[in-house]
Length: 225
Image 1 (cartoon, rainbow, N blue to C red):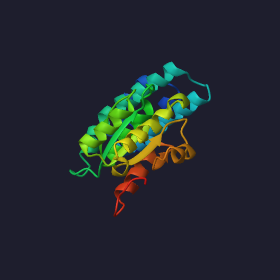
Image 2: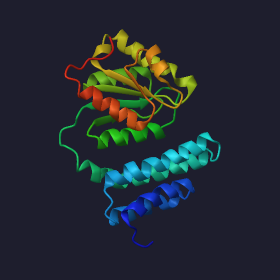
Image 3: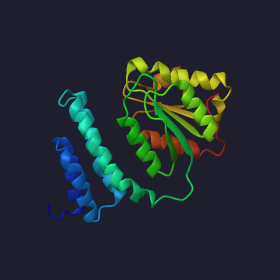
C-alpha cells in the first residue's frame, strides 16, 4: 500500500471497519504509524470509532455475530501494536487501580477490553478478571490488591443481577465504602445503577475513563454510603 497522509490513515482505519475489511486493519494501523500518526490518535480516532461503527451495524442487524467477532480480532490486533507505544508516554506511577470483569454467566469481552485499553492509556493500573466472573472474585481481588475502583460489566439483561450481587458481597464484607463501583454494558442504565446502589454508570468506554478520573481527583475519596 502507498504511504498515507496522517488524516487519510485515520479515515482508512475507520473505513475498513465500515466495509468489513477486517484483514486490512492491522496493516492500516502500521501505515498510520509510518505516516507519523500518534498512537493515541490511532486508537481514539481510528480503532475506537471503527469498532463503534461495527457495533452500531450489529445493533441495526446489518452485520451478525461472526462479523462482530472478526471486528473484535482486528481491533485487538491493532491495539496490540500501539498499546506498548502509548504506555511509554504515561507517567511511571499509575493514577489508580481498577479491578474489572464481565459478570458470571456473561461471556462478552469486547466492551470490557475497550474500557481496559482506554483506562490503561489514561494511566490506570487495570486488573482484568476476564469473563464469567463470580461476584466473590470481584470482591476478593479488589480487597487483596487494594484497588480503588471496581468496574462491573454485563451485556445481557439476564446477567445484570450479577452486578447487584457484587455490591451485595461488598456490603456483606463491610467493604462497600472502600471502593468506587461503576457499572456498564449495553443493557444497563443510570436508573439501574441507582437501584443497585452503584456509584456510577458509564454508557460508553470513554465514560468509564471520565468517571474513574473524576473519582481519583476527589480530595476525599469515599464510595457509596
